[in-house]
Structures are given as C-alpha cells and as structure tokens.
Image (tube, rainbow, N blue to C red; front, side, top):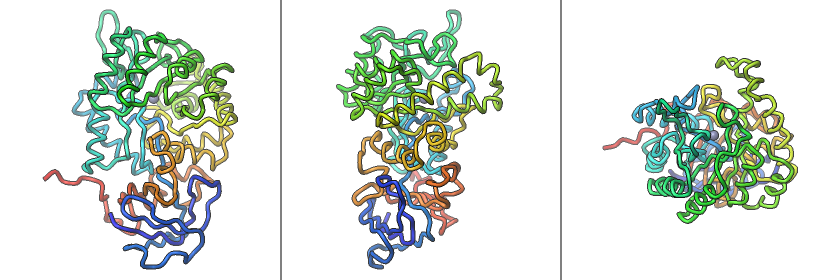
Amino acid sequence: MGSYLFRNVRVWDAMDDAAYAGEVVVEGDRIKTVARGAGQIDAGAAETEIDGGGRFLMPGMVEGHCHLSFVGPARNQDLGEIPPEEHLLRTIRNATKILDHGFTSAYSAASAKLRLDVVLRQEIEDGYVAGPRYRAASPEITTTGGLGDERRPHMYAESFGLIADGVTEMLKAVRMCCRENVDNIKINISGDEFVSHARAEVVSISEEELAAGVDAAHDWGKRVACHARAAEAVKRAVRTGIDCIYHCDFADEESLDMLEAARDRVIIGPAFGLVHNAVFEGDVVGLTSDVAASMGLPRKLEHTIATYHEMRKRGMKVVVGGDYGFTITPMGQNARDIGHFVKFFGYSPAEALKCATAVGGELMGHKGELGVIREGALADILLVDGDPLADQSVLVGPANFALIMKGGAMHRDWRRPEMRSELVTRSYD
Ligand SMILES: [Zn+2]
C-alpha cells in the first residue's frame, strides 16, 4: 500500500448520477482527495501517478446477497454432502473469483456450513486469501419442514440449513452462531418454489420463534437477514425488527406499506439472478420451461418484477445480489443483476449502479464511506474499460476491469500484467 494519483479518468462517485472528468488521490486505505477537472492536483501529491487513459473510475461493487460457500449445487442437499475439506477450498476459490469480477465487498446471505464464512473472512482480513471485504453469515436457520430441511423420515440428510424448532432451539442456534463469530444471522421465514414441501408462499416459522432469534442476535450485536418470499413472511420480518429482508416477491399492499414505513432502517434485496435464470436459462440444467411453469416460476417472476417497481417508487434501499453459486447461477455472473434492475425493475442505470455500490456499502455497515468515491472513503476502486452507465454488461466478467483496488491495495493493475495480486497467497512462513 502506498499513495496513488489517478489522472485522466471519468469519475462516477455513486452520489451524483453523472460521471465527470476528474482526479483522485488515494493514501493508505482511504481516498484522500477528489477533484473535478484536469490538472487540479499537484504531481507530487502521491508516490505513484496513474494515467487512467480516460477510463471509467467507480467504487468497487458490493455483492449484497452472496453465498461464497454455494459451490455449484444442483440440489440443496448437494451442499450437505460435500465434505468440509473440499467445501472450504472451493469456497476460497469463489472468494478470489468475485474479487476478480470487481466485487470488493460481499455481504453473505448464509454460509452452507457454520464455520466456512467465518474462517474465510478471517483469512481474507489477515491477507492470506484474495477476496472481498466479507460479512460472514450463519447457516440458514430454519424449522423442520422449512427451506433447508432436506431430511426424510427414513433417511438423514444435511443441507445448508440449521434446523431449530421452538424458542429454546432458536435461541441455541443463534447463540451458537454468535459464539463462532458470524457477523450476520440468516433466518428462513418462508419456503421457496424449489422446495416441494414448503413453497414460496408457505410461512414456516412462528412469529414467536422468529422474534426470539432476532432479539438474541441483536443482543449479541449481530445483524439479521431473512429469506421472505410470502407476504406474511415480510410482515413478520418487519414486525420483529429484521435488518435485511431478502426476496419479498409476493409482498402485498399491506407489507409494502410496512416496508415503506421502515425504509430508513431496512435494506431489501431481490436476489433476482436465480429467479431470472430459472425462468429464462433453466434449460442449461434441464429445467425446461414446462417444468418451470409447473413449479410456478414464471408467476413468481411476474410478482418479483411488480414488487420491485414498487420498491423503487417507494424509495426503498435495495441492494444488488442475485443468489449466485448454484449450478443455474454460476458464481462470477453476479454483476448481471445490475442490468436486470434496469431492464426488469425500471431503475435508471445510475440508480442500479448505486444499488451495487453505495447502498451495498451501507449494508456492509459503512454508510457513506464504502461504495462511494469521496474524500475519506475506503479506497475500493475500479477502473473500467467501457461505460457502465451506457451498458451495464461491461461489468460482467473480469475482462473489462483494468484495475481493481481494495482498501488502497492493488488486486489487478493493467500496467503490471505480471502482477498476480498483492492480496493473493501471502506466504504462511
Ligand atoms: Zn440466497
């Protein structure tokens, strides 16, 4: 880490809608100066001067619904069947992969096994593994019969769920995750179309159980996220004080009103990539359109689209993040959701990009100092070939990222092709 002066760049700061010609100085892990125009900052302002060649300079992206430990399962129970050794290594590979794809932060929406997220976060923070800033989650705490319970009466099966029935077991599950030092607790309130015994509009946990878990997590200073597709699930989430409410596909008028009343404290995430791919690209995994229709997936897609037009109109804080990591949603495609916000939800390109940067920074717990280009902010910076305000697809895949900086440290720098990364493989000696 040193100091850098970026010249000849178009700065998009995630506060204004438009990009402008500007200059940026980074010192240590923070942005020190941002100037509009050319030649505003003295040549000696930093150790290294970088001519950006007119490239687009923007904040590093934030994955707001991330499952780094979802290592390509076709079925939920596949995640239970992978032994922890393989599982950890493949989770690490996902961490490096999404950083290569421009995501310098990721908010975990559940760890497939209790300690995978926690261990990974620590290795990243200690500089041994190249990965995004990471908020580690618990597994998906669920009930018998809920999303994440794949057991049969005659046959035990693991999945990504941590099953807790009743207030006592809920408290125990949450406290165990706190003991293992997660940042976020994840609770499944409703089912999902992919679960034959608990579809999306089934509410699988009582409000009493839920409230107990949320209160315990908050007592430990943890944030709580939930899986809530059903309208009643959204209402229970708001009433019990959950911080981050995912999906909300079937939100009705009453639940939307409740969300709007809580919009200053609640963050929403559609996790749309999975919904989208299951309907439009299911063939790649044998999910034909007939099967998708029989599961009600096109109907859910319509509800999701209608709901997020409402979320936008009502000024809700919505993060980008698409449930990537399943076979049908390969990790690395994550930035596709930015374009989806524009195409399906009616967001302007700048609004959608803010969901993937500034709003995500707030979800990460760094409101106003992560996901923005401003003086004093954390220096997570991308230099992009192309203009994401005109074409969001330039952010998909690693090809167009000429430079990726996280916390003032270079992960990629087009001027130094030999550089694998300053963040990768710090040796253990
Ligand atoms: Zn998810």
